[in-house]
Image (cartoon, rainbow, N blue to C red; front, top):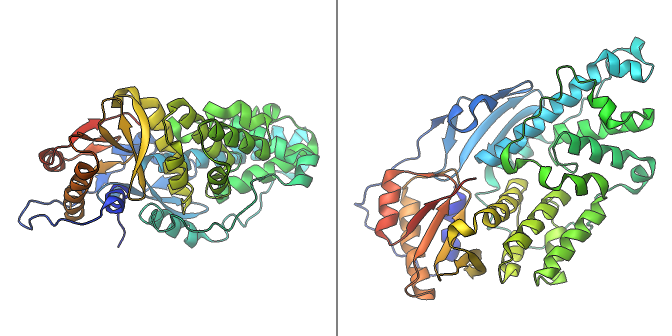
Length: 403
């Protein structure tokens, strides 16, 4: 059974579960129109998001149709990330199809440049991973990771200038140069090969896009905060900076290695997350890093990156975060006033049977560990009236923070 992220956090903290009364009121997560979460971004040049959005009680699930396959993405912000990448794909395709672009290479007679057809090798795996990744985020905590190399650049391609061009093109489109999303990864690689081989500067190539690139900035889904570094440095250099930043926070080389060797994170993720943790500057950051290193899928890795960014940006609103503390296997936070802060980047919280059972258990666990502390639930999403009332009855303060 698929569970939501917040549910599994609480479950991970539980030592002994107290069962709530079966007579208490419960509710089912309600489907919502896609426009509520994505507005006009629900449709683009190369994608359409289905009009009704499902929920598991904490995260919204978006079904997306594209020419490259059907996808299901967990969470509003992860969906915005993928739609942003699809916009970049559309921009690259528009560039390749322009007559001016072909003429720049003296190939006008050959017509539009054709990309490879094999965009997605395992589309079913992509969908299944997105659907199950967050719900199963605790399954791989402490598990060994098979990928041990941190340098993501191909040495030969770097010498030919392809990797440099790919990074510059991606950053110009405000997307991750090391994206794992097949439609964009292949388009970036093929267009970088074409531009590097023909000696066409990225800025000149983008000028051939009819009507402009049309890429809109969407919150923390972009790489704009680290664009200069991502454009000018190789993956190895980027990761070296992330390692050094983590080391300055007291994170051991062993813990940092487990994180950077997890290929569910791109070098951009690692850099942005490390910089956010440095801004937060909380004690015991190792707890966060050790937990994040167990991310078993791309959307879970993105969740950890985004959570670090939100914690850094909203620390003062949460009473000033001073340290991480782990309950069970999940790092949460302690504020200056001693309150325990559980900050989650969820979409909305409904009062389901599982939420009821686990909130009772979590309250007891926190009271045992920090007597007298006020537990604070900080969420970027909505909380239904029933859920808010039931959570409040258990002594929790609910704080809404901006995503």
